[in-house]
Length: 118
Length: 105
Image (cartoon, rainbow over all chains, first blue to last red; front, top):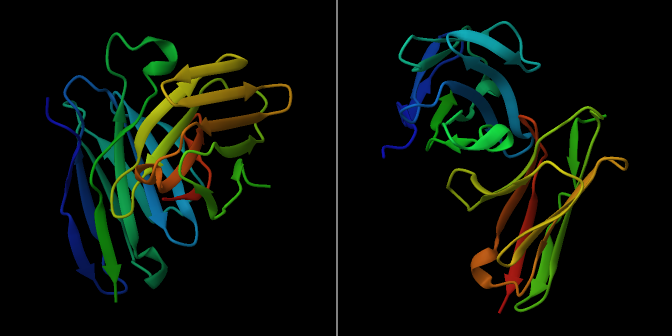
């Protein structure tokens, strides 16, 4: 069973540019959530998509956006990059069948996309 | 006030000891609680989840939940050097900052 796949794994951008990150969830998982991880702030919730709809949103500016496609694959976009956007961006999927109410919320993470903004 | 708070540590215990990790949360209506482990350079992976008050045991790990006190904990018995990692408490989809645990041989 394939895990959560994130692309690209590493990327370097300059301030002002924009970036798009991709996440393919585990087959059968309908929920995809995105997190930003930095040494100082830990793992911060960006947003969650379920069946192509944003279901939850964290406290990030509007420069951070996302979407989910009908096959559950998700993308997140960051526009007008700032130096502080340098981080590891993690995607997680959940919602597998047969896991029960709470088990269905168990997150399986991808390896992450490490973004460096110069 | 952060939604999920953990002692940032670091926490150091000798091999074979019990490691105790604590977490508090602010949303009284929270229903699902998770502990994840993250090794350096790796992604978080689930240790266990709990949703009812009381204890839940899985091998050397015990999660404890007290909804009245808005408190979740994780106990690791017979700690091993391989348990050295950052432990992340998650409530619903929000994570604490993590507690770095080092188990010394």
